[in-house]
Image 1 (cartoon, one colour):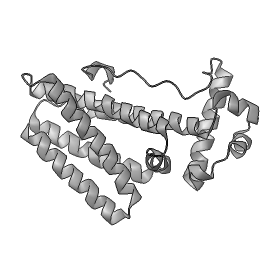
Image 2: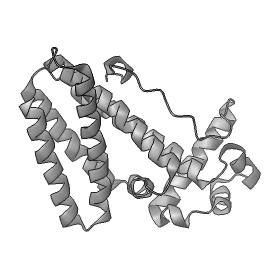
Image 3: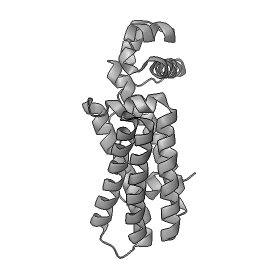
Image 4: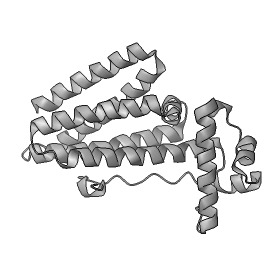
Length: 215
């Protein structure tokens, strides 16, 4: 699988880690992973609003002090989960666009990405929960924006292969907008009933594929 940095025109600097303290020992790393796995289970079953730090510590088998040692609050947990899902998404986008060499390749690959990403939002309760909380949490908004910039840079690099004479700044702006609108569309689609959500995603897909096909 292609790495994201190799495809970026200008790599986007990573956002500061939501962790209060980075685990250095293996036991500490395992503890953090257990906390995140437990948080994911709780969110999937009850939603992030229902998650309480004391309950999370109990179910993860750690003390409340140990939990706060790494995560200052529930928002920090959600932000780290969001960063992990975003990293997986960026790797998927990079891999899908790495082989694009023609306009038809781009349209086909991007169409498949839209379908895949929407499917993930529908399938993963944590992604839905994080997506619905983006506007209410400044940290999640910053992570979302950084993710759109990074994904836009991958798309801009792909467009640059197809349009080597095009203005670089214009390509980057165009790609960033496409990716950010895609994120917004997914959040909107999961906030309404499924048939309407499907129509919204289909409309976005038609619009963006026409834009990419036109060059």
